[in-house]
Image (cartoon, rainbow, N blue to C red; front, side, top):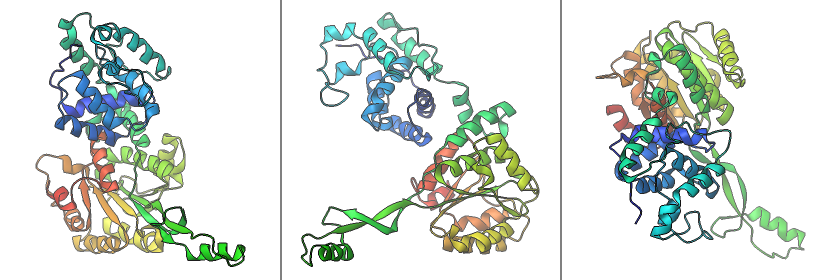
Length: 416
């Protein structure tokens, strides 16, 4: 039997974030919410050995057979040991794989498996690992090597994942802005008014298409035609508070808005004392130029906060004309308003009647003992479907899940 390597106790969230980052550097597409799912899976299935860690990670992170070579290469590089998935299960890559090796052969295969996996990984994007060239030489070194492997996964970016945006230096803000720009925000799907042909009889009978086909054949109906309504993603609208109290977070949030405009076709607005639409300015690929143009377009940047007036202008000039109808609306603000809370509640109620889902991102929520007692925040909260912090890159994964509609109910989010 191949001796299993026992892993030391490691915090599941840190391990998941580090491993997913290593996979992304190697060219494997892994969104931040995958790290959250892996952390939850590791809590349910503790990684007592490398074999269990491998299969848990593979089930959560691998979505296509083509991703297996890269995944195996990165896993072998980070957790270099006598573990060989091909020796534990026949055909790990699907039908047609060679049978698993016997115990004696398994002891001699790790080096060859490591070399083969390393060659299959993309040459230009290798994960950083301090143990990439230090394989264990004896079973007594297994625990130490595994511990070093986990520690080596903590790079600069991973260290920044849990830090509040307000605590970052200028250089660290640039790194987080690049990560935020690449974050994918997916909205729930809805049925479109348009339909497409379907071969299944369980779909709706397309009477018009059936009659047209019968007329072309001389009024002799040869077969019935069916149609199914298409699915499309709901619109995503992002409203970001860039007042003085939000300035430490606005730089990262605007980069998130820019990425959403580029990847999801989102509509982006910023507000302080007035509302400014920045979708066109943020469509530029260069983040620094886009941020400079956004700041120049919004002259009230880092000014006061008028939430009610900004929401009223959005609903009157954009929302009622179709931009907010059936959309997911995300508001980034600490809720510190200079207006009567009743006005904030009235405008939130108007927006609530148009939007499909409303998410409020308040970075102050992460503070110990925080309660939504500020006038504007307390007035807006009853109209929100989700209330999240978004104060760090890790917390943005919760925001992405709230946009999709995953996770706990809105009441649980508000009281947590």
